[in-house]
Image (cartoon, rainbow, N blue to C red; front, side, top):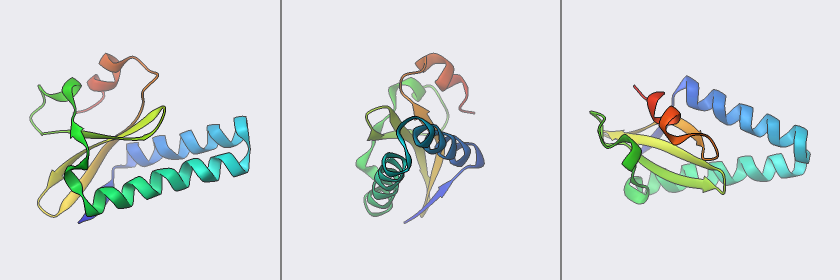
Length: 103
């Protein structure tokens, strides 16, 4: 399957990588980014690997989440042969406000 990231989710990933680079250096930021890419590829091969996201159960789409780092997870849904990444969540933030940012 193909994984497509929304503009917002790609921006949040880029921001997280940049913050990681500023705080911990290039090597750690690269490792973090590679970890996200590895999980992105796992998702393409096994789309149902993530669990149903309970904070988004009330939404019209069946959102799932995949933890890709201690502090981050990918929020996605499946449409046909495409996996759509709706958001890249920093799990340290308030979960209710994160859920409100999803359609």
